[in-house]
Length: 246
Ligand code: JEB
Image (cartoon, rainbow, N blue to C red; front, side):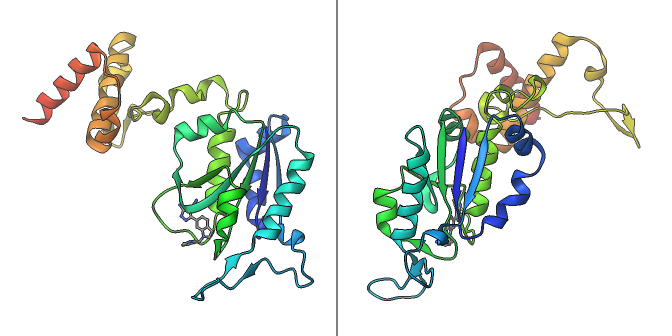
């Protein structure tokens, strides 16, 4: 996958792409990142990329020209027909489902604004997707773009080892993960549940499923509404509800 990012603050991305899993994915050729400062595409001699809003009012608006020309230059080099993602607080909420959908693409272009909003023609005629990472306000789209890149790249085949398969992630299974413990079995009087030391794998699996269900019920009951419970899971949930009503 090729990922192009358009930003007025390209330095914000250097650390993120030079660390850990995102870096290894690039080194192994699974993905390549390119960050472009779209100010380079401003066709006026002052390299301005924003202007006052028509109709007046506070704040500035990003002009369409630098972004349209930057996207056109990237598309000319592209082999496919890349999706153009616009980061905006008004966008569709980004979810694991959207990450899975984007992970199938060969080329993504991500547009990050900063301080100001975009000229509406960028939304209407340049972006294929408008995305928001959540209901809180950021100063720009850069951090949101990093979140999207991180969640999409880890889904690309070969990026994660088998141990950390994306198929077992909470938002893929639909349940929150069960509690985990490592050595020691007794840490300053805080003990690991006996069942995990029993060696009885059927019992351990049952305990894990039950604790996953308990966590999801307590913390994210909204996730259970769309989760297809099988008979075993229904029985475990009944047990949990009986325990908590005591
Ligand atoms: C994304 C952005 C700004 C109103 C207030 C602030 C470009 N979940 C999210 N919150 N905020 C953003 C986002 C995402 N994705 C976000 C792009 C820009 C915020 N701002 C600042 C714009 N309008 C500028």
